Length: 155
Image: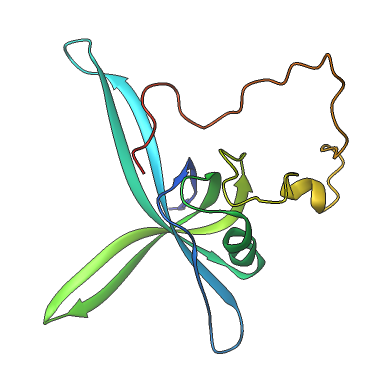
């Protein structure tokens, strides 16, 4: 029997990335992600539900997250689930988290850690982004926040 372990999440950071380095010099960053879901309950009323997920980023991805992202930044994460187990005070503990294999910065809300003004992808030379100013008659679409409506996340 085969198995498949793949997670795709779109949410907002609950805190600034915490970066550290392994003894061999590899960057590791831990982030918290809040993923919102809005659905109707049995009474037909809208119910907002937020799921909090811990995510670990490795290597250059961890460094980019630490440099460009901050609390509230929207981000798309693709990765795999991992169960961490340990023993504390004589009790066995475990926690399900996501190990990111790919990270995409969705946009910035009030800067979101991107103080340079241009999208990070444009600084890396991605052809789909231009650093030139748009024409005066250009109406920019509203920024996508990853939220499907309702109140903002309260952090």
